[in-house]
Length: 388
Image 1 (cartoon, rainbow, N blue to C red):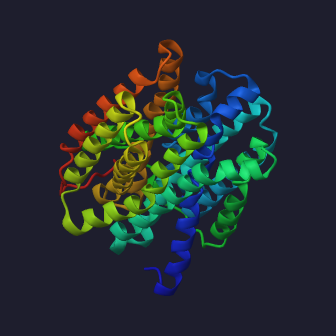
Image 2 (cartoon, rainbow, N blue to C red):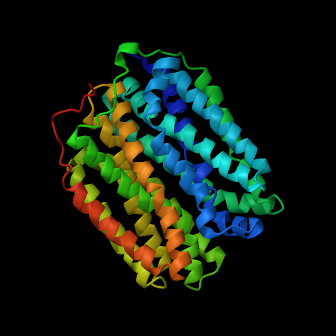
């Protein structure tokens, strides 16, 4: 058992790692139109900067438990932070489009491995406080994602409008996180624990599909929300304000909703409610984008950040051991991000073909309804998932 005094440092390491998992992706959204214009790229192609890391976050997530066995849990996460630092530093040269896309791929690799390992880390060191620490974990990710979305544009303007500098400034916090993780004592995993993922578990598939839908909605909005409101007649500045509200409101909701679920139970009802609220918000953006956009974005941010934070803590409750948590999380991320990466590309292609964002956003609203129905199938189950 970890001594109480050392838990604060373990908690600090968790928070720093979680904060750095999202800015490399969300920092792109406020600059997407500027980058597309400067590099003369189509919207479908430029969306790869968001879609590619999401795809790799899915495809490479199953490698996380194996890397933990080879390096140890703590050193594997430190390696991920170092990889993120390298990728973000290279964005200084991202005026060459192949570097821009290449760094997006490296970001996806690092986040793919770090995500499942951090869930196992919580199960190992904070078993008696999983709900509380899981809420802080989700909040930290939301803080990082929000900072990337909100701070990048003004920082870029302060740096003479050079968007490559605005993107690469996020290398600095990853360096701090890497230094902290290297100070943690490493605990190698037993080779006998290197089992596969729970592909044959129906429950694991339900969890993975729920994550798929909420992640697809989130990354579609991260990429195209500002562009949708710009098309509806708002300025880019106003669109960034709405997007900032969408991200900022996620900070309290990503912490509060898991806490409320732990206190009152019935997490499947909360998840289903988040899906219905998201469907209403997306329908308004599709058909009535001029109706109270700030309020709509805030409500949508509560729903999607809430569903995201709930999906993050699900494996901690559903799996038996820290490595089982990592494997279930790896399967969830593999399936979820592997499919969710298509949503930004499909929305961009739909806009290029149809000349409007109405139909793509209407489809997103239907997917939110499907997410709500799926959540009702995830009533808490006393039988824990174990990998064989």
